[in-house]
Image: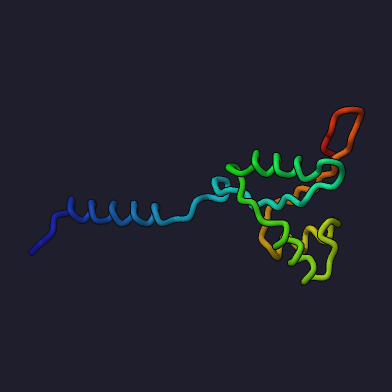
Length: 111
């Protein structure tokens, strides 16, 4: 039985569509992996919770516990520039947020 060229074209288009659907999402479309380390200073925990809640839908949060454990295993300070680079490559994160809460007059600000 001989198949028509139209049928072969449909089969090839179907295979192409399946291959494109199985392809991973582009890097720009994937969510960034971020570590938000606990904030220091007055009401740091409250500010940290607010930041985490605001970022929840936009990024994939990596726990600070996992980040600190990786930094300890590597023997580096997870808050220094070299330590951040080494630890991020270990836990595969894109960014680390380090903040400090300062009290200025009656306001709190993040630095």
